Image (cartoon, rainbow, N blue to C red; front, side):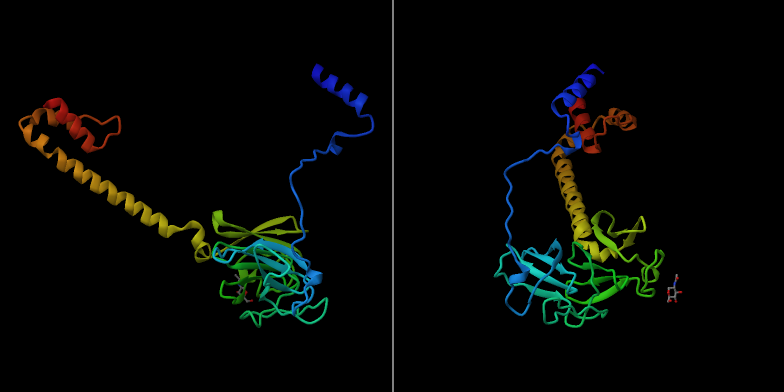
Length: 277
Ligand SMILES: *[C@@H]1O[C@H](CO)[C@@H](O)[C@H](O)[C@H]1NC(C)=O
């Protein structure tokens, strides 16, 4: 209480004109560099309009995925990013000119697929790219092989907030996608409709994320190793069992005793052998 009053007094005395919210803490040690200028690309790409960027998933070829919303084109840009880097069109059609846009709605392979000013996209662990194709009011998927399909909203094609089978669902005119590996889903935040919606993906799409194959083989390896260790232990304990074969009564008592400290039967057997021999 007293401390509160004191700090209030201090605040009034030394900071009469500023509020606490205006406080800035300037942390040094960072720097900013322009690595690519879309206005200065001289080749066939013309001007590039970066709207949104995400890291790519191919470990052998580190790159980013870049969405040019004006042109409705997705690019791959190799890392580290430089003005001379080999920028490639992932999918979408590049028209000539500055505001080149070949916006449209066409699924298919990389050379035919078109989008209509998408403003958000997400990438799953397998490398599928999910596109909030908001002017077409659908969610599209670009597979790692470059094949584009419509995975949600295909039957409606207009704004709305209808849930249900994905192709029957409808979306707002401005929505954003995020891939959530935890439950193998896309979360859709609808700007303007106050809704968070979940689009459940196929398990194959999240395969590399949950890695069930590795999980199962890991369990198998542990189980096999445990069996081998148990077998060797029993094999080594054989002389003791043979040497103390004349004590059936104690063995029986021990067997009927509840094992309270969670030892397995091999431990119990060894303990019993030590005691009774
Ligand atoms: C989804 O849309 C299709 C095509 O309009 C229709 O045949 C089907 O009955 C719809 N399904 C549901 C669950 O609304």
